[in-house]
Length: 363
Image (cartoon, rainbow, N blue to C red; front, side, top):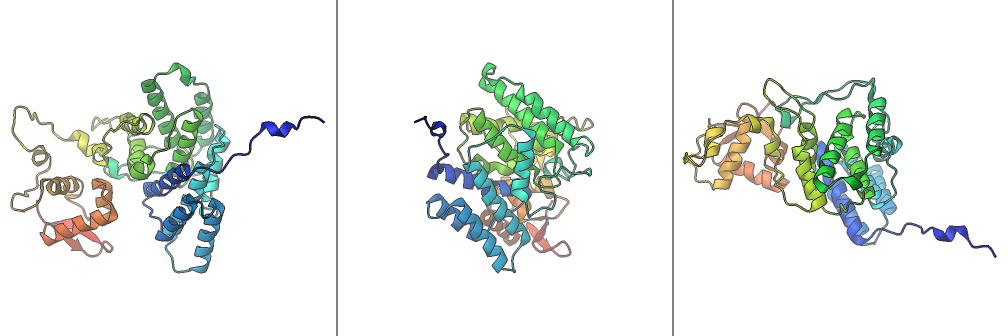
């Protein structure tokens, strides 16, 4: 009897508990790049999948049925829930082909039934106001050349032999490749989530172990680092740099513990006046940000956070989501911080700008 040729192949086994936990944490964390929050129901479902009580497909069915049966829901939460499950499924599956079609198909898989243009390259030009750029925008790829630009970048990357690189060189190259891919901004929405999933699967193909929770904790930093890698302002002497993205990748791939703070990426931070702290016994934050907090009985950390927020919103209103982004606090932490500022009369709520908006009272 002839040997069965199919016995040489092994059907991909179910991901381990650790792999599923990583996939879910990354999937849920990545929703934050677009300001989305998942439901508590999804988090319960994710726990059941991680524990092996339900499959990922059963989790998807539960969420789909939930939004069919419950009409009173937030569409943004629905998007976050459904995309999270799809990201978790993709990250739990180790199959991957480094190609343009794979990149387009990831977007289609993540956003099918959510965006009408899922998997389709945008046919219009875009700009986006970025907090990290003080309201300015990256210059994104022209809609007329998107396909050719994607094709070129991926074909060029295929030529790279990473066996010839040390860790530093490899990380610098990966940072430049992925930031270039993101800058093209092939889709109307969902570019960062698509690029992140593509990156994770590509890194695994290159032999890196990326099973940590960095995307859960620092997805907003990841997006901001992509923005800074593609922004130039000659008048302000600010130029594109992958240094922030490299710090993220070094933590991801080399298990380093570089500090990843969004406030450091804001272009205002780079243009602040430098102070020689060895020769002048001064409070650097007081020099950088002129706000008098001497009469308030607050901790040093709280005052630092107030100054960091004031630095960005001294002449503008802000909300809880802005506090979360600037200070990197949890939802509960941001609410507690705002309550403290209100109790001390440092900020006041304002009307006409939507619920939950505030402005500074002091200068």
